[in-house]
Amino acid sequence: MIVDNLRTHTPAGSKLVRQMLAELQDHLRLIYTPAYDPDANRIEWLWRWSRREVTHNHQRTTFAALLADIQAHFEALRQHPDLILRQIGSPFAIQEVDTQELANAA
Figure 1 (spheres, rainbow, N blue to C red):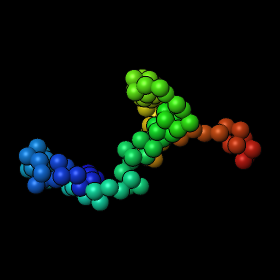
Figure 2: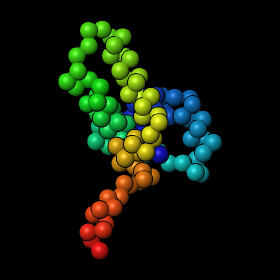
Figure 3: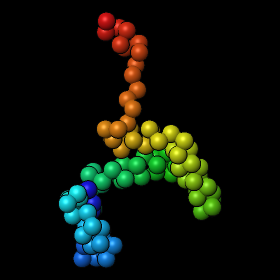
Figure 4: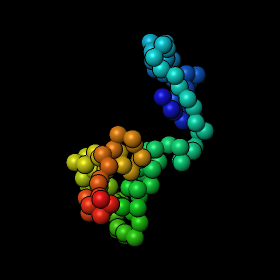
């Protein structure tokens, strides 16, 4: 499991992490990244994408309007989990195939 170095994610900072490591010590190994490494942390890739979709080039007059837009964005993503997997570079994402390109290759 790859985790960042946020204090609550370390055995020294969290009893829950210590307990989990004790229970799963034969099946789990933690690999720590720097405390802030947006290129290695896939959730940062999702946040970057969501910020572009919701906040860039959009103006709202109230925080409630911004909150409604971000909630709508994530609700839409719930309907298409494969979009999220592709956005974060997951090997489990279903790759779209360009059938015209395949036909031309033959």
